Image 1 (cartoon, rainbow, N blue to C red):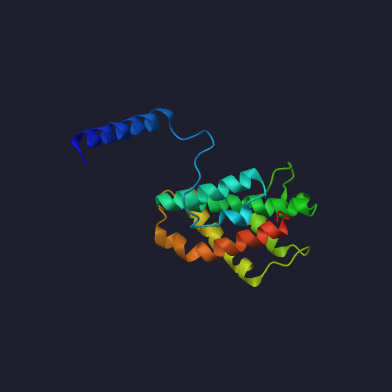
Image 2: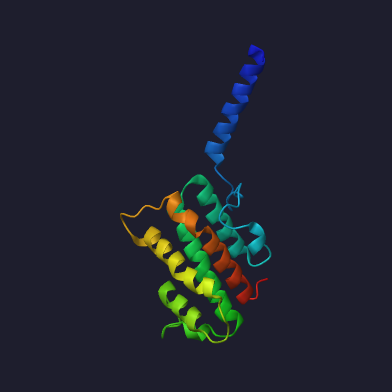
Length: 171
């Protein structure tokens, strides 16, 4: 490569870096490059906010932000449980006396005991594990999730999300 071409390439790279630094990412964020936590197809066409949370979980994982990934998965599960209860006209069962939705612990308890549907055995076993890492990542001051904490749960995440998406009538 000639010195002129190298200079042009360096200048273009510097301009690109300046533009990215000044403008930042788009308001709605960027599309995750990978789908290592959840395939986009699993939630495509459900609700925009669900698709965005899936994208953020994938993006956090690919960047190595495992606490953020776990928190996004926790948020997704919480949202999908609420969606399932609302779909079946049962949201009153997961609200407190003030009309606010219950905390995730109680949402999971209600979901596991709801007789309107029958969660698979694997889903029933996975929900508490996913809540545990999400809680640690969101609430424990000294816990910092690592890839080895998230990787063993990837099949659980997929299973729970897929089951809840169908239960909520979103697919």
